[in-house]
Length: 107
Image (cartoon, rainbow, N blue to C red; front, side, top):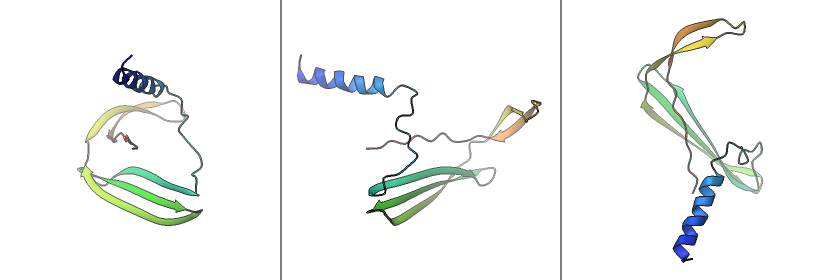
C-alpha cells in the first residue's frame, strides 16, 4: 500500500470516528495549568443586527493571565415562524428571531 493511500485511509477513519453523537470532547473543567478557554455567543441587538461576542481566557500556571474580548456586529438573520409550547402543554404559533449556529474549528 502506498504512503498516500495509508494517509487517506487514516484520515478517513478519523472523520468516521468524529461523526458520532458522543460528547467525549465536552468537558466541565478547564486545565488551568495551561489552556485557552474560549466562549462564543450571539446576542440580538435589534431587528437588523446581532452582536457576536468572543471571549478568550488565557490560563498560565493556575492563574488567569489575560482575558481578551472581541465584539463584532453582524447582520441579523431575520424572523422565523415556529410553534411554542408552555409548561402546561399549550401550543401557540409565534415569530422569533433566527439564531446563528456556531461551529468552531481548532487547529
